[in-house]
Amino acid sequence: MERILNLAIRAPTVAPGMACADVYDLFSRDPDLLALAVVEDGRPIGLVNRHELILRLADRFGRPLFEKKPVERLMDRDPLIVDGEADIDDLGKRILTERPSALATGFIIVHRGRYHGIGSALLLLQAQMRRMQRHAEALEEAKLEAEAANRSKSMFLANMSHELRTPLNAIIGFTDFIRSETLGPIRPAEYAEYVEDVNTSGKHLLNVINAILDMSKIEANRLELNEEEIDPADLCHSACRMLRETAKRRGVEILLEVPDDLPDLLADPQFVRQILLNLLSNALKFSETGQTVRLAAELKADGGLVFTVSDEGIGIAEEDIERVLEPFGQAENSLTRSREGTGLGLPLCQALTEAHGGRLELESELGKGTTVRIHMPASRTLDTDHSTIRYLA
Ligand SMILES: Nc1ncnc2c1ncn2[C@@H]1O[C@H](COP(=O)(O)OP(=O)(O)OP(=O)(O)O)[C@@H](O)[C@H]1O
Ligand SMILES: [Mg+2]
Image 1 (cartoon, rainbow, N blue to C red):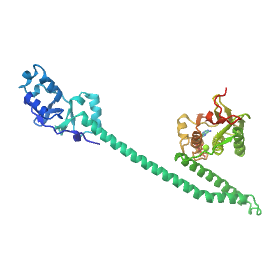
Image 2 (cartoon, helix red, strand yellow; image 1 turned 180 degrees about the vertical axis):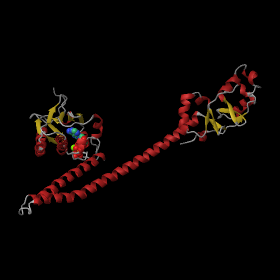
Image 3 (tube, helix red, strand yellow; image 1 turned 120 degrees about the vertical axis):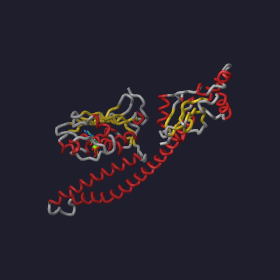
Image 4 (spheres, rainbow, N blue to C red; image 1 turned 90 degrees about the horizontal axis):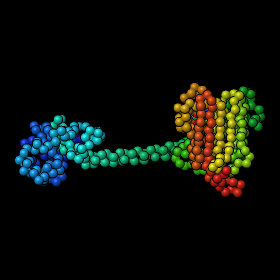
């Protein structure tokens, strides 16, 4: 906060009885003097503005009329008087709402009720400029700090995930090997179950680490697309195949609605597969036994390709939709809480889609189901000659 006191010009004061001609002389001697306070016993009782006084006396009959008269005859008896202890910001607002004319005439600043100095619009403006300058500098500093913090976060995550992934891969590899019983049967047989658990937990952990790493790369703008011409139908089929076991376990059917004659897509196949897998596994995870999950791909009239994953599951409340698209955001729902997850799937899908120039659209109704559409732009669909399709009827 900056106090109004700092604004004050310590101008001399005049007594109410001083002759107008003498006040005129004071103004003539100091061209920077905007106004003078008329003070009695240390307390301001009026304000004389330079231009108003000069105009009065320059008038044809003004001089003979007022020259000898006391200045209190011409002063403003109700000037804006402000307390010097107050904040400059409040003053700006107060003048604009209460007395905009004070910007032109000047105002009086008092300290503990006694005259302290004259304030002007110019000084107020300068003070506000200073304040804005300070804000801008603080913001710039905060931005640099945040960028540095973000860089070290990304470095930390990259190193950390490397450190974690190496032993995890060993754990997964060895348990896979033990599971296969290549060197002989597992004894006692109960150990087989533990090995299975270690293996699935290891794979789950690896997925989480990979998702965190991808998210941090996206946030650091370090994501690179390895673009290839891919067949969207192939991709849909393979994503469904990968989740067939999960679907069976949950008693949910996956319905695939993908025409064979879709044009190729210029995209990063790993990322598009990851998008479909994340969306499908959400749809499976939040569906009930006996329900159906649908995966569709279609060509739009504008030439863009749309992947749609929909389910008839528990749905997301309207007030939660924004949150579930944030990293680590999950719906505040006891039903979802009971299902595992880190809350990175959807934000990753959105970021990966946007990295392709596309858009993720989420529609959901509590208890009715959820539909997520991935819109890929027309510039990424290729016709059979591998040239870009612009308009398709
Ligand atoms: N198909 C869906 N039906 C109902 N709720 C969903 C659906 N998809 C996502 N959600 C809600 O959005 C939240 C965030 O989804 P997201 O995929 O980002 O994370 P997650 O599935 O909880 O964990 P992760 O994908 O990282 O394993 C979920 O926790 C759930 O509350
Ligand atoms: Mg998920």
